[in-house]
Length: 130
Image 1 (cartoon, rainbow, N blue to C red):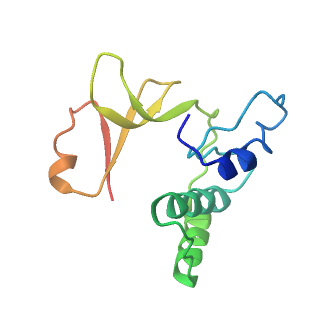
Image 2: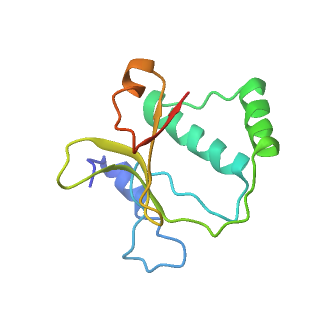
């Protein structure tokens, strides 16, 4: 477990995994998604959590909210069964951390903002340049 102050531990112990027992704790600094919510809601939650983890405050402005709403309306909703995924995962036999691993298909997804880093991935890795 990450090091928590006594006050943080006290707050953390007030929460559990939904529908779980009091012994099942929610992981610290991990964003969980709920498939019942909208894409806009879940991306907003992830952005909010990331801002808190990195900067200690949330700074949403109208442009960010507008972008999230646009993503929701522009998102294609294919009629496929949902996949199981893991994020920020490292293979036991490989030191490279992967952004997203699709456990259903075995596909690996990397999101890159640097063009030189985007070129370093093998051809069998799906790279999205942001």
